[in-house]
Image (cartoon, rainbow, N blue to C red; front, side, top):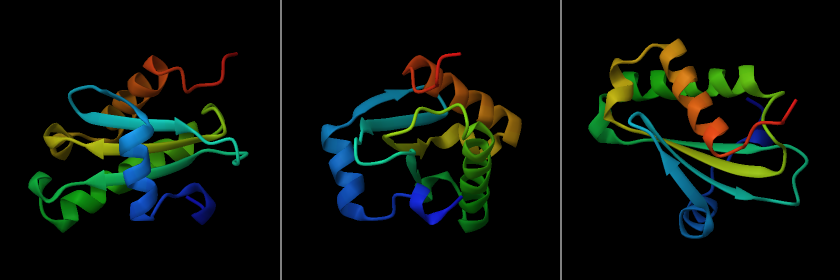
Length: 114
């Protein structure tokens, strides 16, 4: 994913936690907020140490980045999105994780209507 599509700064994470809307399912939590300055969306990923070792956490982040990459054309532009992985994600494959992410994004109407 390109650098312009990422949220890395702790201040931006904290702003989204405070002012953004949130929604969750068993596997993932999503925080999102409209950002008018952007012509595309940005994502931040958070996988806590309780979920597993570094290899497991990095694999979860890779799966989520790839899912966003595949859904890039369908996601509404101008949003900052943070995804937090929960415990069940350590046992999930890529397709299950993508399905869970699609569920969250569609429930919060972050997909472009066709």
